[in-house]
Length: 264
Image (cartoon, rainbow, N blue to C red; front, side, top):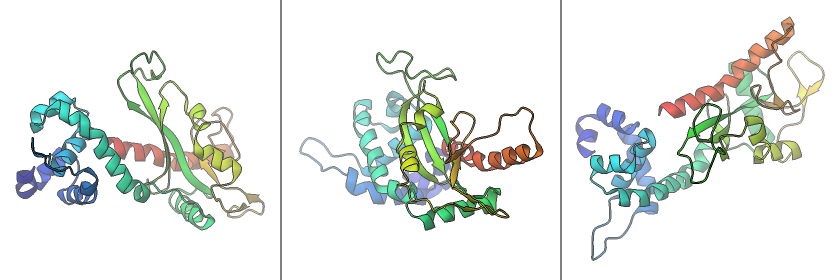
């Protein structure tokens, strides 16, 4: 790792899926959370080794045994620190990277992004579910078996116009539908009881009637006052086609965000 960082940064990025500077920043921030003391029996693993193995595991999905031969750390040791390192990264970065607005002013900025970039006023986010592949849990049966033909859990995410994640819900079984999963989320509860802090309804550009703010989703979701979905594609009027086109432009940001996440 040190040789790659000093002599071939491009190879380092290809191996770790991030620039050396980003790796060093993460390492510096999480070291106090994952560093262990040396003992009489053996020296503790360096935090950089733990972080490198964890990121390699997340980027490739390799088994612990496969990683063991690449990094010369036994699989029985790797399995003990993968989760603590992930938890340290979440504790250090979640507040900065996944921050849901709570004030009308902040939501207005999100809505302005969708209006200026995707031509859909009053939109405050695009929502969708992403299936994360997993091994079938013991005695899991078909609970986690999804319609795509593999076992998974679902990452439900709300994304703004700049591909930034605003809200996340992860862990629902893959056999559930997006429309059913959202019913049990904090996002749905906050949208319906008003505690999410949305601005009051206001007229759309060129209109005179107040319209509330909303998120957009695909056909899998149930239509609500705060969740818009496409008009069914039969006997569409010109207005319906324009609406579907604009909604599709705004909704694809969540698909793009998942694509960027998966590629890394």
